[in-house]
Structure formats: structure tokens, C-alpha cells
Amino acid sequence: MDQENQAQIQALSQKYSNEEIIAVLGSADPEMAVIAAETVAGGNLMFIDPFAEAQLGLKAYHIVELKEFIDHQVYLRHMEMIEMIIDISKIIYEVSTVRKQFFTSEVSV
Image (spheres, helix red, strand yellow):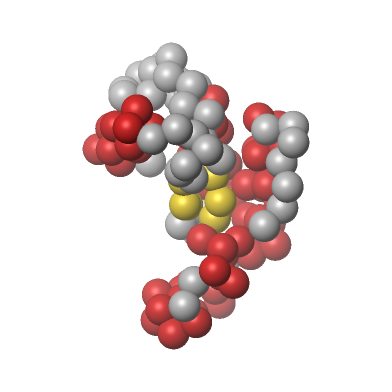
């Protein structure tokens, strides 16, 4: 997650409560998705850039977890090819594990 995206997320988290927004991730790499999920939940673990020491408390979901909430044609247009190359079950497992780690009352979507 680059610094520009982090700055935008931080600005939104200051405008809205963490019950009003979530972070939607799109990384094809499960490890990168975990880092992004940990960053928006608990802050930047490297203590550099806009999230340094900021604990936003945002729940993160990978876009594949939200498939049922997205218009089918829109999802197909943007995600159909990507679904063929990513390990969906691993990404969902990894990102949901981060939510459970930071939010003990996590309920699956």
C-alpha cells in the first residue's frame, strides 16, 4: 500500500468512524493482503509514512470476500481473469485471520 493510498485512508478514517468504513483490498498476493489488512487495523508496523503510530481500527476485506455484494457484471468485468490466477481460499483465510486477530467479535460476511 503506497503512501498516497495511506494518506487517503487516514483522511477518510478521520472523517468517518471505523464502524462506517472498511478497507477493500485487491492484492493478488496473500502476504501483501495481510500486510495491508494489518496496516489499516493496527497501524504501520514499520513506523514510517502516514500510518506511523496510527491505529485506525479499520476492518479490511479482500474484494473476493465481497463478491456477493457487487453487481455480477461489474465483478466479472474487473475480477474474472484475476480469479483464475489468485489463490482465493488462501487470501480469504489470511485476511479473515487478521480481522479475528484485531477484532475479537468478528463475524464473517
